Image 1 (cartoon, rainbow, N blue to C red):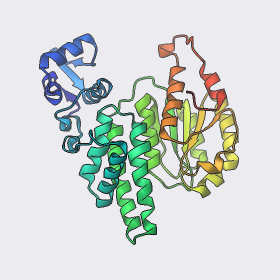
Image 2 (image 1 turned 180 degrees about the vertical axis):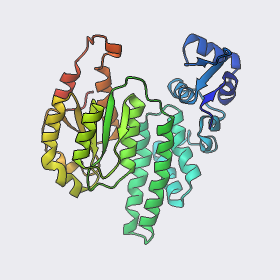
Image 3 (image 1 turned 90 degrees about the vertical axis):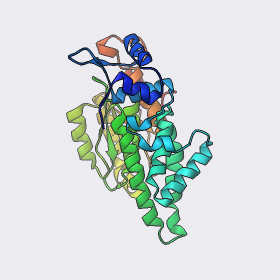
Length: 312
């Protein structure tokens, strides 16, 4: 896939004139670089970002790396209908349709938290219940998980990591093998502007500590989808939150097994129930970070950390 588009290529992708794209670049509406010969070039991730933030329709999504999107008419579906179609596509193993149903809302500017908390999570929850009623339920769930992982990874690779962005570090705890919620969480954090580092599932707390020392994150997040895994780290979380506070990092914990930890209290520990809450928390952290070393006249990041709750 091409990593840069010419103004003509982007114009054809958006079904607009080449002169419009050049004007947008000259006005700073879309970032463009120049070749040695003075020709404009637009990074693929910048083109995707422009499409999403301006809600510009795309006539050739394949040029942006989302081949399936144009052939799956999701726009006229209600949220419930979209969830049903995602579920049916996953049950059937129809990756082409599943990709289109997930990527379409993303390209249209829908927040990833909306996509992940709604159609993806609900469809996967229903798939996770199939084993109770039919013999191939586990097989279908595992295949569906792989399809979703591919869909989310494509989105993650299309999102830019901004220079000098605050760092986030996270993953699933030891004994927690679930890849998809971890991948969705790190992708949501990249979308809102974090420089995300994903440690993946089955990560001991000692590795989290090593990552904190090495990468100096502003946000540390932990996914707990298995009750036994939540129980095993319960006694360590408050101490970990305390240690992170000394390093100006906030701890966020979420996942399906979060109920096992809901009664824990610490000013530097946030218990989240959804990707939307994780996104909101990260945006609060980003809002408190002074750009390019300038003084911040708003609320300090220390005050946000001490609240121990989600801003907004």
